[in-house]
Amino acid sequence: MPTTTNSSATRSALVPDSAAGQTHPTPEFLADLAAHSARLETAEPEEIITWAHQHYAPQLTMATAFGPEGCVILSMLAKIAPATHVFNLDTGYQFQQTLDLRDRIAEKYGVEVEMLQPELSVPEYEAMHNGPLYKTNPTQCCFDRKIRVLQRGIQGKQAWMSGIRRDQSADRAQAAIVGWDMKFGMVKISPLANWTKQDVWKRILEAKVPYNPLHDQDYPSIGCWPCTRAVRQGETDQRAGRWSGTEKTECGLHTIPESDGSGI
Ligand code: SF4
Image (cartoon, rainbow, N blue to C red; front, side, top):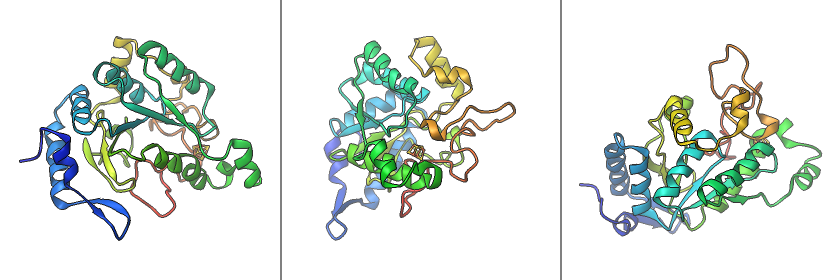
């Protein structure tokens, strides 16, 4: 039977790999996570968040880009575990409406989202690359301004939560409720994996959860302004406006590891 009572038993199953200098999960630990994930398949997001808090706080964190899913989770966290560490990957290229949403969330729920920035400011970064790198190498830009920053945000943590849903894209369809994140070497929890877009918006409207006004202007998915456009009539893919015109569909946060972090 999987461990269900406390975090210490779960953590003790992690076996550090001293050769690699990283922590790697044992097969037993992965089986334990899979069993928890299977049990939580039918759980409401609030129950999943409560489970995550019981097992991993205070080494639990959450990354949010202030999308509809993130805002819904923040509204739940405010009731369940308001002291949970939450951070945003503040690339320097976010829409002003996204930055304003941070303040609206803080005002309504008292949850302060930490804005984590890359080491180099946008002017410094663009000067180093003789112009905006998102135009010529968005994969590297995402790696430098998102992945590296996320690596900093999760330091000292054992689990992170994200707002991904399985129906968002083919890349996300395999997401577990609870699983091992190979890329970042920690547990990943996706409380809304089983929710649909309709479920999310029903909650937003019923509970009056603050959301990004760009969603009312045909931006179903919002990232950095240079790499996001409104969807066009007839486009059914909710992420069609992300990295439009390129092969890129993800920044790399929610995909299998690759050497350079390509993906999201
Ligand atoms: S989404 Fe675009 S601007 Fe933002 S980090 Fe990625 S490539 Fe750079």
